[in-house]
Image (cartoon, rainbow, N blue to C red; front, side, top):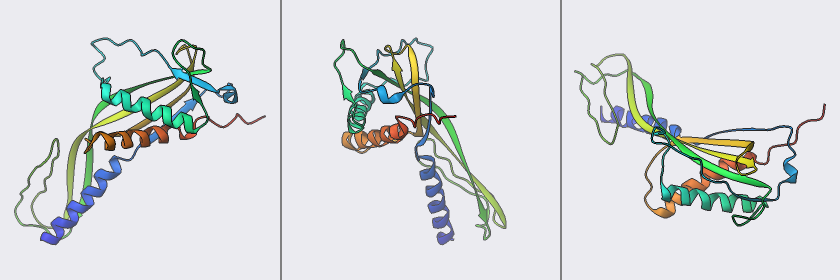
Length: 201
C-alpha cells in the first residue's frame, strides 16, 4: 500500500509541476515595422482604482521585472534612455492574480480499504474513496499570476505588441531565486519580440 501511495504522490507532484510551466502568448500590430525600434524607456504606470483588486501591487516584484526587462531588452540590442528623453518605444507591465483549481484523476486498481484522506499545505486538498477498482480525483487550489508586457509608442497611447506569461504563483527561497524566476519568465515572454515581419502578398 505504501508503494501505491508513493506512486500517487509522485504522479500528483508531476501534475502540479506541469501547472507551474509558464504559458506564453503574444499579439502585435502586423502593419508596423519593428525594425525601426532602437531605444526604449518605461511607460508611465497605469492609473488604478480601489476596485481593481486583481492587480497585484508589489514594489519588490516590480523592481525585479524592471531588472529583467532591462537585461533582456539589452541582450536584444535595445538601449534604454532616461525618462524625459525621446524613445522609439515604451514598455509597460502589470500582473493579474486569479484563483484556480487543478483537478487530477488517477486510476486506482488496488484499493486501500475504507475511505480516508488527509490535507497539507496552503490550499492543498487530498482524498479518495473506498478501496476497489475505479478512479480517484484530487483537487488543488492555487493562485495563478499573469504578467502582461506592453510595447507602445507615445508613452502608452499606441499599442504595438503585447506579450503575456501565466504561471502558478509560488514563494521563492531567496531574493536571488525570485529574480532568477522572474527573469526567466520575462525572457520567455519576450522571446518572440520583435515579431517576424509580415509576409508579402
